Length: 155
Image 1: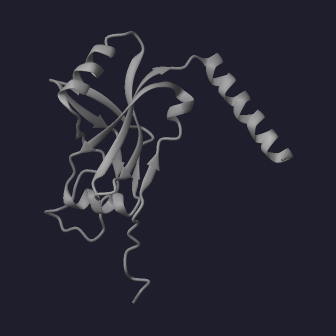
Image 2: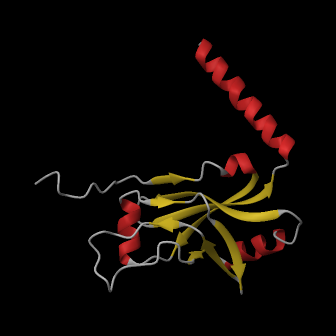
């Protein structure tokens, strides 16, 4: 009986691990996200991915595209959702205007870094204003990562 029950996690923390390697992260914002009932259930089970996701502004509203949320197994046909549908992110108007102004710079983008459940039980997405790294910056990141690993192994 106990093995049949779903393993719902109290602390969900889904990260975009490629983000810090591919981009210089500048400003961070925590946004709410508009979801359906079956989507939040899948997120609480940890069945979501931010690897291919990105954010964009459209008519003064922020949307996330490419975030994959697996369909909930127990949801009926009426309550099922599209796994990679666009979802609206919720930010204050002041923050949206600030992001819109900074996106005018060349090479700037908004990427999701982390998907988590807040203390109140709401799904939140941490997004960052980012600038793409050049190839030599990525090599430098790898060197620093290897150096830290070597130091950790000696200690």
